[in-house]
Amino acid sequence: MQAEPKPELWYGLPYGYLQLDLQPSPEGIQEVARQLDALPDDVRDRADQVFRLYSVVLTMLRSQAVMGCALGMHPDERGEPTLSVLTASTVPTSGAHPEAVLLQMLGDGGTGPDNGLVPVELSVGTGYLWETERTTVAPTAPPDGQEGPAEGTVWQGTVAIPVPRTSSIITVQLVTPAVELADDYRGVLLGVARTVTLDDPTVPDPAEADNASGPFPGSGSGTDERSPFG
Image (tube, rainbow, N blue to C red):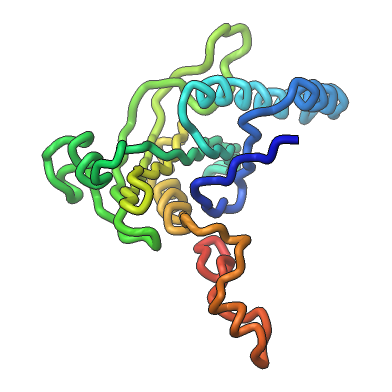
């Protein structure tokens, strides 16, 4: 059995997000469909909508170099469920300085709120946040009877992180049709960006290993303590 490739980055997921399998097997999809058919009538329709959304998102992401994707479901002010899609990816810069490449890609308008590009300090370095509203394929299930995916106005937030160590640009992006909740989702996006790390969290930190022999084994500033999600 071929070992799975080691991830290029790691990040934390906030409450309400479920990591999606970007390479599901046919057997796995059939099993999910079987489980949906067995659900009670009052929840089957909603679960089927989420399943169809998964199919739409999966088709989109397979055409892009996306390393991780999570589907979020949270109640809005009326208690109705809102959906969002969180993705993480890396863009190689072919040995060029990634920050220079990023700023050139985004234009020469400079940084700051007035230019729509806001620097944010993260544990892996300086990232750049920008937001937009656009009409696109929305992270929601298509209406009954519609062949293609749903379209609508969505809020899209992106944090791009130039990484000289790997000559690449990490992007963390959040998209939701709940445009009126942009402030809340911006906080979620920045929270995820603050957890991004290039160091495998499953590998023990030598400094923490030394502390483990002290009177309080296991204490220290581990990954869980750095996470803004608790």
